[in-house]
Image 1 (cartoon, one colour):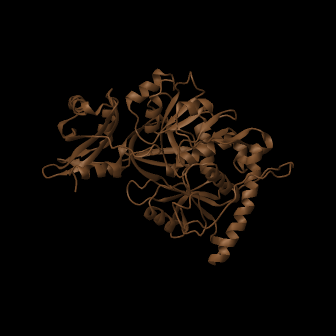
Image 2 (tube, one colour):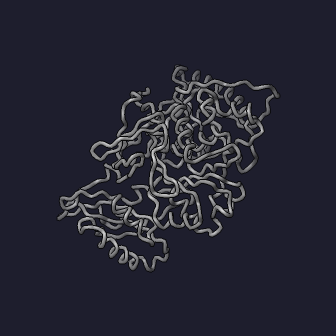
Image 3 (cartoon, one colour):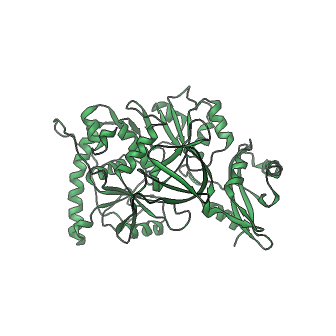
Length: 481
């Protein structure tokens, strides 16, 4: 894989295994040779489109290097990601489900005249370039290696913005390359494997899935169908990345097992996973990997292997100061995009990620977010400690602590909980059982005052309950103002 660090990975595989399937969507397969040809044609179009937009907007062409893409996962968006990597542009994907205000805030930061929109009806007036994605085969000829500048910035991905306005994170190809190489040390991915893109490209985990797959010369699977056993079986999926919501849905199908599928590895991230879910995976003999990572480190930092022990992956460095986690290494981002320029950070500088934890040799123990800590009755509360304890209960599927104001204690705890037993009639009975369990494990000031049902997600494509969901639920109940 090291030979790929200064070469376009698509061109490399087009030369060495051109008939291997690179991308399989719901319509037809695309070989590495066909993908390489398509990127060549799209590069010509991009050049023509940007020249036109620059002329019409009288924009200095030196600024024409950020391609904003407002789209959901699909072949077209994936092609643009790989196109930017090849041409030296910055791929800037935005969540199409954002409100107009949220999109406009990010457009202001990116400040680029080049915007491709998948659905004009949802974001009227934002599209500035039009690209024809129709496949046109090029005359057959012997391809030659295509060099790329691996230190050239290649993407801008916004952080989640859970604490303040999201930051525009800039990576170069080497960040993603070494992220993929380190992941390979624990989760091997080979050219005959099929990796399903089950996470969005506007999130670093989705972007990393693509890079890992293409570097390995494997097949990247795309589908607009809901994630299900049938999809996994039909596509012969071997590698799958999941958040807890997706895993919960899949485990409801008794056929979901490595014996009845081709699955070799499940990569789990995005939130804590309950003991119930992990036990279910162990019972079905899945090889699963819990993962801790962040946008700034190009996805994975530490990953487990069929257990809860997070091992720091190669090319990452971790240190602990005052219980806070600091990160750096070859996967660490190169800087922020602010005020219409890249603000680089020296490679040797440690990144404070806002998480708390401990190091035991090469294993990382996460204790929680520094910015989630609060005080109740003069005592420090780390919500993740209580959430983790809840997830060890055999009837708890999800748990989240939210602080609410209290005139006597300053703040008290509200616990949102989802039980594996879904009959809401017995919700209060389940809460009493959980309350008794927690009272035996925690001191009194850490015990929740309110037990509330897990907020309902709207839409099958919604994967994660946001902090706003919890806040809205508390507002409706009059527990916060």
